[in-house]
Amino acid sequence: MRRLLRAGRASRVTRAAAAATVTAVCAAVLLPGTARARPVTDTAGAAGTPVTERVSTTSDGSQADGLSDRASISADGRYVAFWSAAPNLGADHYRALLIKDLTSGQVTRVPDARTYGGSHTAISDNGRYVGYGSGTRYASAYVYDRITDRTTQANSAELSNVDSLSADGRFAAVTVGSRNPNRPARLLVRDLADGTDERIDPQQTPTGHPSVSNGSLSGDGRLLAFATGPRSGAYDVFVKDRADGTVRQVDVPLDGVQDDKRSWLVEISRDGRYVLFDSESDHLVPGTTPPGRHAYLRDLRTGTTVRLAPAGVSAVAVSGDGRKVLLSEEDRLTLLDVRTGERTGVGPAARAIPGALTRGGEAVAFTSEAADLVPGDTNAAADAFVHRPG
Image (cartoon, rainbow, N blue to C red; front, top):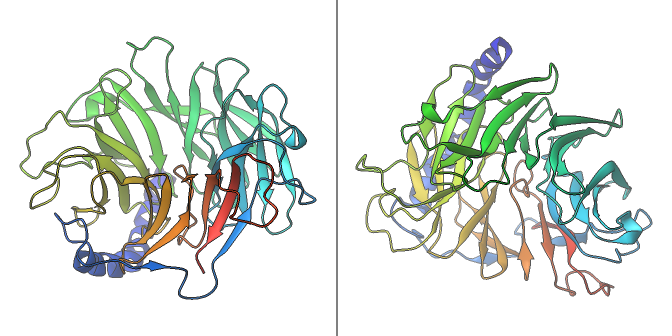
């Protein structure tokens, strides 16, 4: 923990300088209390030609003979982890977990990783480590090291899963659920170097809800965003500084009065400055908020929150630097540049998970049933793709 504290102090100045411009322009484009400060334009990548690449193929480029989904991409944009039910990618009665090297085209199967429907996938910044849940009945949390070909069990409990990894893969946020719906979920941070666990205490939060889940780690592992709620439901979002133990609320009511409206954590940016979340609360930003679920971005340094889109548009992922946000509306994905307000269509019939964006938002990993995104898509199944806006 002393190492975490020193690293956090050393990186704060760098993070502040890198993100200062984002905040200044963000305030001019996405004003608190407004869905959009000015009309945004759909772009196809101003700096070059947009490219969409199918990820769910064999190493020789053959298309998968079954569906693939739940793709996450490394911060450097080289590796994609995804689940597949395709027999020619190693699936049998269970789905297989694959890692695609976008530079070489090589596809590697994670040994013994299997589930009926897949689980969330988390990948370290350089693609070396992949976290997931695996089991033939109830999944448990594991982390796979691509370099040593070693798999480490991050938690042995049933219904446990790796929610996120730190940039270097040392720390894993693990949610432990229960088959009993009345039993609250637990959240742990596993130090994979020494095998110790840090349990997140729900009594540290102002609301004190017993269930804690959905952990999202900053790149250095110092900050942990998480959701709390009664039993297994999520109602509020918090961030814990693991170095000094302080806990801050993310879905902060302007009037200080807690309500019973739900909030959902999406993820914290890798630089630890921004938290992306959805909320049904109507008093998180100044002005009138129309009824419904809205996407929000919280700047932890300035203590300000902006609403990103009209009701019905859900937040999906945030880039490592907090500049790009992936939004979902009516089965379509849109990449929003928070600084300029420009939005870029990613794909139709598409869905994605937290961890779908690279460090600067240069690439998006997603799943789609559309057959016209790349030439020769004739497998009549959902595929995993990577889109680069250009």
